[in-house]
Length: 485
Image (cartoon, rainbow, N blue to C red; front, top):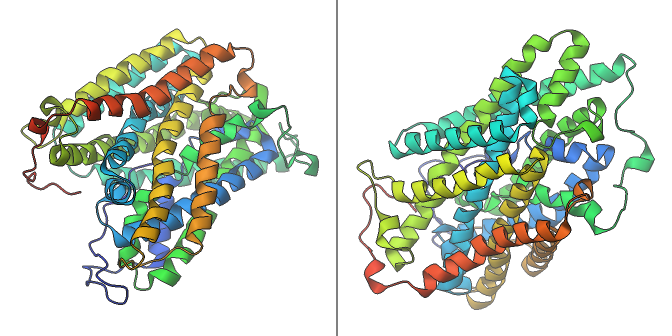
């Protein structure tokens, strides 16, 4: 997951006529943009634990979550400008709209520690691979890198999005292709796959509900489609071109997700796999097989570059959206609405940074770095899933209450899509409270308390308190210079 591209101008004005856009984009270009905003190697170690079964575990959420999310958000984006707040506030209510935009922002509070936990483990292979399992090292990297990102963002630095776009090639496509090719060569040399690749292993072994928990992480891997949907109005024939674009993007995303995960499963035994450092473990092992271990630090730097580019583009985006809505409706106290001289919501970023620092320190306190990484990933996913539940309900309500509202794209079988997406999102949210089978040795009550406290506290309690104690004086409806919604 990375920041969505800046939307091309263009809105729908009627069912048969659209305002001219500054630039049309092709459905293939939109598929590439979608792929760049979703595809990543970061989740590969998580699914490599399942070996060949990772194919099924990637396909299932793609069908029940990625596809409904893509098509439903496309209809909403082609009919209502303003993003998730506009959709949910018109479809359900303004308080629910605030909850949705809050969750879109709040998920980043746990997203950064999990992303930077991956960065820390990857960076360890540049200096000393033993550091990858050190909680102190991981916590230090999270804190230093995050605050560096806040400093960069608070200066209003331009061109960060370009860094993230370049990161797709530098830190995802090139390493991914290299990993898969060398994995194939590794097997071709007669080496036995670390994970069995037989038909009996197509489905994950069933060990109760806990055996399915890792699939929850794939919902986060596929999230963010609602932001790319804003581009639907820039297609010449959305009804035909958008589905084509989404199916091509799904194919590309699945390829980028599945093949590197399989390559890791071929090379690194599941019991030795780190959820944070698994990608580097695979590169280190395969390079060692060819006597090319000097390449390991180079690949590590490439992966880190891509992750940092993604972090910087996400850092200001969701908080900016929350700021704009809060100034109009008075949802946040004035302190959190203040801007610095560069027009950046620095106070929000600083408060977020304090919370991120506390969370980052948990890496130093939780003995197993992989366990900490997984817990933060689950909390991130659950907070974001609250937003998706609201989006699916709002889509049905808008189709029912405003059937004649102009839309550039109408999702087929909308109620069915929303029903599948809602059920899958709710199931994933609930399953996230169950400790995965890989961490069965831990105390399930402690796990439930941490995950539940993080997800429900940050995702529901905090926005409720802001809404409950809001004051009319908190409204600052005057537009921000250069602000975009």
